[in-house]
Image 1 (tube, rainbow, N blue to C red):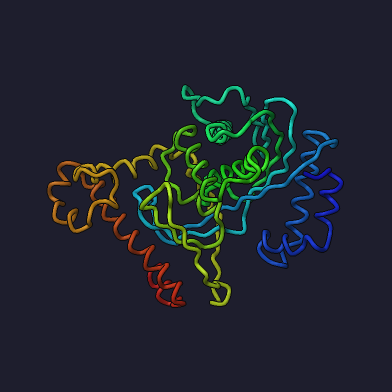
Image 2: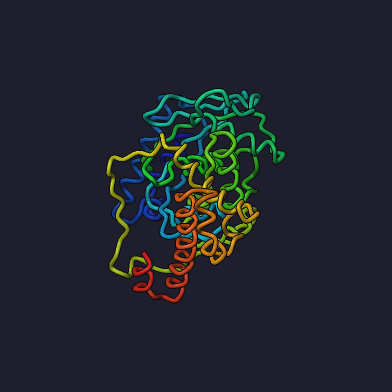
Length: 336
């Protein structure tokens, strides 16, 4: 933790510019990133006062390169963090209250003495805060005092860049630093984020979004054992290909489509259960192909199509990862 003046001096130093270039997405964006952090400190001071010691945290959004709706069926994904992130300026409190003010949204406040899920109303960001804190308490971390946090995000809500996962990973990193001496790994923090979203936010997401944000970089992940996912960093330099990944803000929003999202894993699992399994990764694709007439009657056409989607995407994600590992960018593009 630093005093606010110490933090400002550190951010304004030349030594910090290398870090700003990494987090901001390049040397030409480093100054803008530094100014964004300085502005976040100013906003924190306006909200919560200047006589505080603070720490600054960051968690990136993510993009899916391969493996659409495969993680919750224990399949393979290829994902990457992006140079759009959510940052937080944080200071400890002396009581058991956590207050988080996210730019553009009302302040969320919870008590560390009341960490049970709120299930009788539509979940809000407060439930994600409560869920992360509860998970740390379940792991034996002493949650004796709360904190104040101001956050500002470039990861547009409802845009498909996993703003909720970035927020969960951000909260996990804050709690890891304040309550656990940073002993939890990026994979464990991702799992805590998934727990908060599944149990507290009531959205049955897989683990890809949180993993891509928490681990960072481009990663191939095998979710055959979701408790111990196999993470393979992809050591491929995309900058040398002459291509860049462009993120376009179309103005669309899927924030209110939780029910539609939940139908996807539910229907995939319905097919798996027809064969006595929990997820599609446990069912050979040939077995599904042979049983399509019976599956259509038992599960419906859409569930069968979604099962076939899983197998195509699972193979595509593995093929893309293999192509990048051997440096065959053309093969990667063909698969995309």
